[in-house]
Length: 332
Picture (cartoon, rainbow, N blue to C red):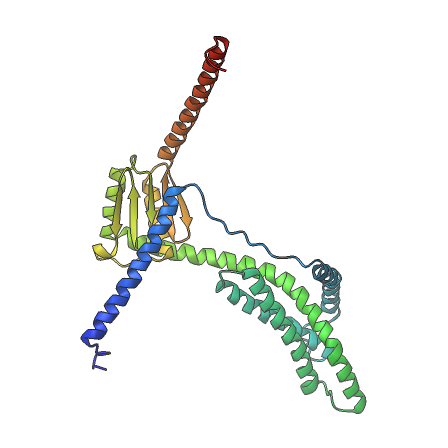
């Protein structure tokens, strides 16, 4: 260890550089493969269809239980909230329901944090978090309150009553958590979607200002504007931008002395270029932003229709020619 950090031997430096070069080559290979797929079919997006096996008996039983539990959970919650006064320290039942209510708020808050940090399986993650925390807090919170503040063990009969309530509270906490989960999941998902949109908007706009002020953006803009009508499409990745005409022009950020872009960065660059280029359509495809020339696509579609029309006319001409040959005995 040196005074200013780790001391590297020459062999270690060479090994580190070799590893970094291998990682860069692998990253370039993956991006190139992705671009080859786009070149083969620019209009198509790969969509993974996940199929889950159905277990009819288990699903039927689960559906029946939920069908009974959901309305019962909402009826119980409405009854409890309308019966008690939340925060009333003089009434033990009111305090128990207050604990359950506060537990639901805490569970929804944790569900919101989970939603903001989850990319896949967000619905199940949020619902599981809210249900689990809400049920645990509702159950344990009420038991702890009864033990500490409601004299659960003051007498034999109170102890029996407490033990009976402890068993009954399992079902009460479960139904309360079920109603909380249904309401809370909807609210949390809406909130997380809104917060994510605001965050992305702020971050993308911040990145747009930095890109707009850069020399490399000005160079990219000059190249795209000068070939605007001839460009077929543009792909923007984290490490480079590729402009495809009859030939391909690629600008690597690192070779120009600039750092790589993150997901928000490539979207910001795409938005800026789309604003400057008329009749271009933008699409975000995994880790690539694609800008397609609509005029070029329209011309290609018209050419394809014209070619198809010519092929149909050629087929009709050959059929007519064959009929004439059959009539004149020159074919069968």
